[in-house]
Image (tube, rainbow, N blue to C red; front, side):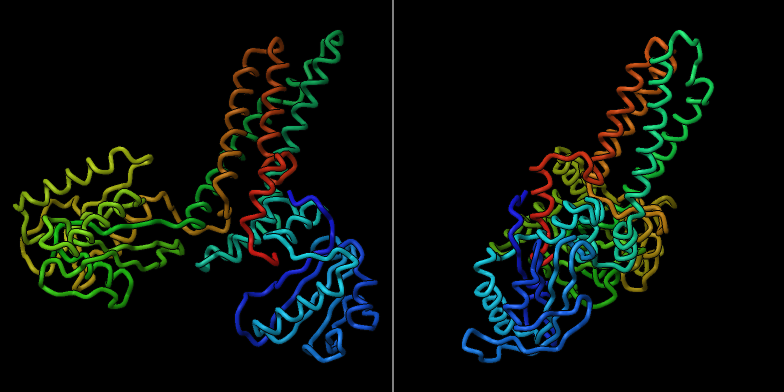
Length: 456
């Protein structure tokens, strides 16, 4: 946690040359600072064209200044934005001038994510929404943008809060039964508590599934093309990417180093890596490339093991396949291997029907290949219900589901286990509260916001 509430300043737009650059300030009371900086009083929420001047009254830049008084601002504090010309030097000069004028007010440069953190601390957004800001900025597919935008508008948080409310209602019934035993009224039975518990389980499972799909959308997949030399790995990369990225020749060992390209499959970002053919190296350069190939194979989510269909009886491929399986067996989790038979166009001999056969030359079988990749990483389909989740969200949902399932076991035992039933429900609430930030350690908050961009 950053702790101090001194006013802060940062460049809100990307650093570099641009037509417009935006500088953002936030503090508990910026009015006096603003009047001293611009020599005028700004009308709230009205863009004012003015010239920012140096201490010697020399013009620095002309732009638009907008003042958002608290509490109706992004951070919940007074916020000032200055939209000037987006040159690196001019933005730096503006910030330096603001720091100079703001020295008596203890104005300082913002830490990464500090604007979003202040918005969170002032209850303008919850933690899931704050994280969605960073995720929206980092999104690299259209599907990812849509999903992150839904989380930013509070869709994920509303689902979580509804579950917390239902758990609270169930706990109230437990307390009523425990507090009035002499009345001999089973509030849980009367309110159909088992049905309520089942509903919570179903909603939790549904939210967990949507979050797991969103995590795939957020992180994507690392797919490595591996195999012997000259089986068509580079041609497959080019076909998947839709352009000629890798040099393709009949000469074995043409690919000496890893070649990376990020593509989209059904909106999921997939990083493809073409590796050097695995064989006994003939020189030091190829040896280094093969060593890097093995390193990349161990890091993969999915390995496409490429075989030449025209060499069905080639035992070298079988030995290499087994060698790769051994090499990845200690990884947690181990990469998923997909065996791909290339060069369908070059032979009339077809392997068994259950094998994946493609032609990098004609594009035959590539729709099935893309579908197999998505299946391997657990992606099902694009859906409006996908939650753009982080791993910590999934971990919290898993803990909550475990506690709710434990509660169900105690519910079956009857009234003698009601206190344990209530405690498991409480622990489920705590786990869900970690998602929105209602229950979270200060150290974890600091870690989360420090990963944000400066100015956000």
